[in-house]
Image (cartoon, one colour):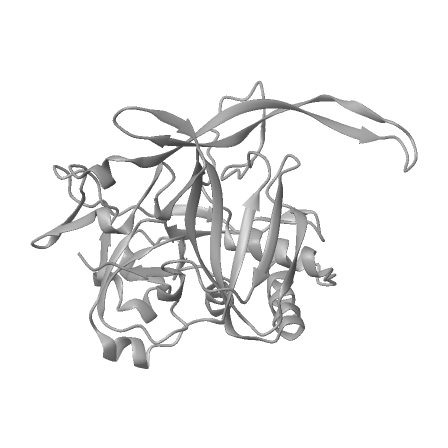
Length: 340
């Protein structure tokens, strides 16, 4: 087991909604951390892996297969992330993302009977990392031929988000620099290199080493692991596949079989006065550059969703579709145990 580090070198544009023109009334939304498809793509770029498949989902399977062979990996390649932040020379973490609005320390998620909430009374829990976006306007450029200078495409102005992380305490606020930490279940190392991450020219350093796993990373689990009964919180999206096009409830989706079923879902914690909220959203699986098309959308439970996994028999006997197994192997549905 190795530690995989991803350190953004500039603000990331991790758009969760399609890019639209500036004259279109639309909502611009961003992810607070890179999707696993983005990370596995960055890892493939760092290794110089080239893909042949023009199928957007087949491309994920091909990339996973080639990385598994190149780095000599197990069934579950990547788990995570846990987010750390550099603030004024000190490191804060590990933290868990709550949906797309903040990052909190796991020990600040408390239990009161059957309810879970965010504790904010202790000094340690009064500091947090907020996430927000700054919406920029971009201009699409094109060439008339392969050697000519780029020119502005008529009418191709668009809006895109840039993510901003802010350290917030009772007395002060500072800009925070994110560091995303994963476990990498592979034999070979990954040398430090700079790769594209997200859109709009985003860059990050990515590397793996044998050094001791960062705090908490060794506790991460995916549905491909043996998960003991207990309470967990998701550190990224839990993918769900609807059984039919009229699915409106969690008991009619695939994706929770290995986690104890739909009754295991508690929701996203809030302040002490609010009950955890169950959120299901549409999730795009990213842009496939080989074929220059977007991958399809699925349903998902967002990061920060708490689950109470109790039925061990269900987990042992359950099976799931091949697409979900592929998504689990790159880090989707990664869980972190809660002890309080």
